[in-house]
Image (cartoon, rainbow, N blue to C red; front, side, top):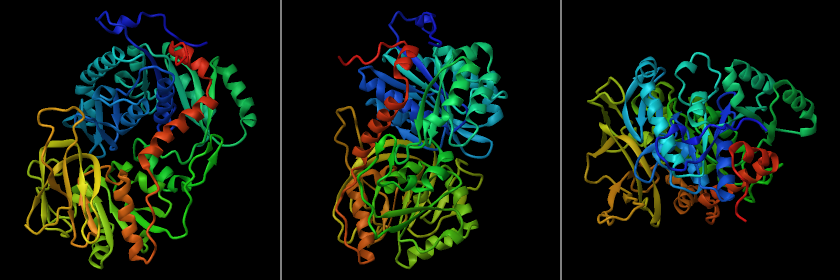
Length: 552
């Protein structure tokens, strides 16, 4: 049946509280599908009546998520919490590393920035502290939930990192968690990657691996069966399932490693795709397509802001890194950046800054979010060296405002309305902000199209906060910028924005048809359905120490 420790689960806590079971998903490499398989198991356990929570001790990602209380965690753990139907907390990802350079990262501890660390310094001086923080967060979750599904990072067989590991096998030991090892067959070499990973593990680590999930398979599983039989005989461990390649799920990728593959191909062209799990969407493409380009900054962050665009039937999205890729876009989008000043310099070096300015000056439509928004102003002032050693950098000069970088990060969920000018009506919006820069208007005539306030999930005496102006736009509303991540997840606003571009081209506006958040919930269910169809859930339940579906 595989590993299920007989160790008393109270061994990691001094409390007499009944604590939840654990199951850990590790992978043979990065981007093999750990995050989505973790989400699938979270959804299944939740559907089957168990109080379920995700956990990843340390995450490295520029794609982050703001919790209900204004804290920052990895996007994947926020997505997994959504799959569980619960509010995400920082205990689900207590340590977040946000790369700021080739060898440095901002270290975020329980949702708040601690400081920037060089890789060697972090490894030598802070990792032992981080491990203790992670273990305490896991204890808190286990006291509140029936099962915690842990996710590893990269591979557990990174020899140079194992001595101070806090996210793979050491965490599995601390959690007393059986491990499911995931491998990606789509990239080739799946049997070598599984056997090689096991060979590099210590015997006690190898014993903790209870079975394998082969992910992203295309074709007839019968043709794979001889390999599966060999693998089970070679390792003495079961194959727990072969998951088919599932395009079009529209669930968030964790980091930019997945960006070029999944999104550059437009989620395998979104609409009408049918997999072994069944039809993924009934949206129909239309002949008239808006050409939207997204500037793919080297330090692009929160690229999930663009996800709703991939669901729209009248949109083609292109990621652009070089001037010769520009073409004749209908709309351009400047996304978030972990280092606005450095990415703005890159924009100029690539010749893209002039193209952006030319597009806007000639009456083209453009939008900018967070870091991209910060680039639109006159100057970026960084007296504390938050983003670079340059105390002042010139912006694109498209709006009369400066950006002043502060030592304290803004992380907040917001709600409100937006009206972009012209004949646009007012649309309700919500989202979240994560930024170090603060916008300082230089003109009283600056158009501020958003009216927002903090979105509170717990009512307090001060719940009736006043709405404050936010963002910028041109008089005609063709160009706008905002700090609000998730702004395009608001269906009515997104469709209004796209329809205005359609009218520019003499096309008939489309009715609001894509309800992105409903589609996302449906995507969780489709993911769970695929996992139920292709995984040995009875065995997985036994490995996790659970009794199976308890809904009656």
